[in-house]
Image 1 (cartoon, rainbow, N blue to C red):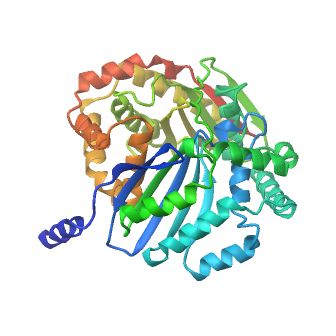
Image 2 (image 1 turned 135 degrees about the horizontal axis):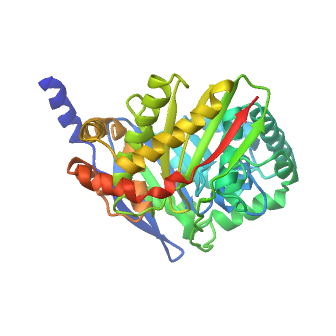
Image 3 (image 1 turned 180 degrees about the vertical axis):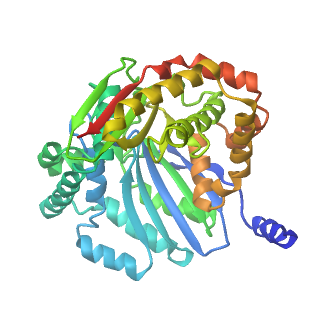
Length: 427
């Protein structure tokens, strides 16, 4: 055991903690999050564009994700296949993807191919393969995927819940879009999206691996100088509905898919988030041993699993969960969820539950930061949420010192989670 610990410490000596720097392009200061790791001869780079994800799909549902797929079609000169083959021959990976709030371009390569990878990234951004042929290809693939999801009842119930919680907003529509919205997308829509969102004023660079930070700055300036300055806009924030509603969707199914959710009053940079993390772990995130799992599976045998968590980001803050059960048990399962959550808010947690949760969260922490990508993501999220570097470690210390009375006071203050809406897919 001592040898393992010593080896870990020795390895740790050649791994630097992620740090925050910056580069300047066209007069705009772009944040740069960097971690040097020389254990493997690889370099991973991300360009994250803020306020550029599916939350921007106010006119056409699914446009952000569709635009990312179009960017994955390679350069105009080489085409999708030619570009992919050229990257493969050099062991370079480039891909675009979106989340709710961000648009991300990932690049990975061996350190000896880092400059080459930046050359191809620049080529992709300068002349993406935005052609009618690519458009129709991506449309066909996307519409096929959406059609297949019509029989994925977890997907159906999840979307129905979001419509209940965020009706009348962009969050009420599927991030992948609908058959109608995707069919309506034109080349000019994709080009306009990229021109507006892939801009310097929204960019954050995240890099890790066996590479010198000065080389990163030099290469990234070459890539980013082709992008327009653009403008940064604050993310809108959407409140989850407190009107408890139930939407029943009838399908050909042998199981009932129950999704539930409610508001959760918390800001993304709230210093009490660590209490929410502990509370929801005990209620429904912790798997076996969580309140929902114990009551719904162990005591009543209503479902194989039951899960709940909170989503706290710049744009939303809400509580949600799900389970599957037999058709004949769906009403009992629904009422049980309401009862468990009501008792949780009214009475809080026990000293033993708090102690066991502390042991798990603190003891499993090394698994959440064992890879370079995990550490970079954590540093990025701290920065993105407005916290100082090292905030996550401070949060762990707060969890360690959390008192039962303080946690239960926090739980009882969040009565808004009792305003539960349900989306149920059933026979």
